[in-house]
Image (cartoon, rainbow, N blue to C red; front, side, top):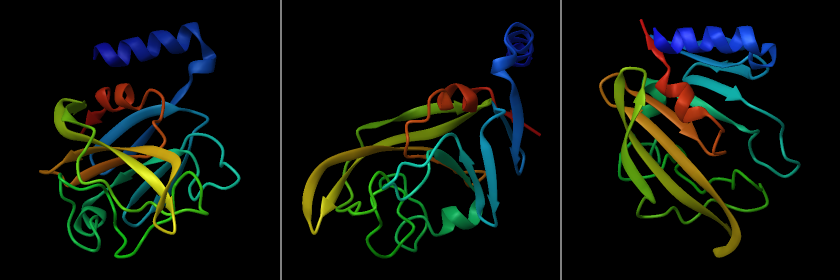
Length: 174
């Protein structure tokens, strides 16, 4: 209730802070109105900005459901001790498609719990290094994951989306 009041108050003060609801299953989050949402059978891609010229993906994050969780680690189910890697092969570097996101790190840089509404999600952050034919480059990106094992919901953010943790903390479950 407090979050809804805070959001309503901010909208009265600043029209530039307008938001819209994004719903996936029983989860609803409020995101800036200018963000775009693409629906897929396995989840949502929330696009938060532009697309860099060489990027393999546009800035944004994913809200993924049961089928994406089932095939989230090289064709097998998502595991807390591994980065999100749904492909059974090498994946393009998110920041620059000339390179590969390989090898995947063996240890996360951050672990713990973070809120998605009134629920505690397993939170893991990985530092992914892009490589050129097996040689590491200076290009890296974070992969931040929020996972709720009971609902099989996985949030994947590889662009350190500003305000995403706060947006997820303010989520509402129906």
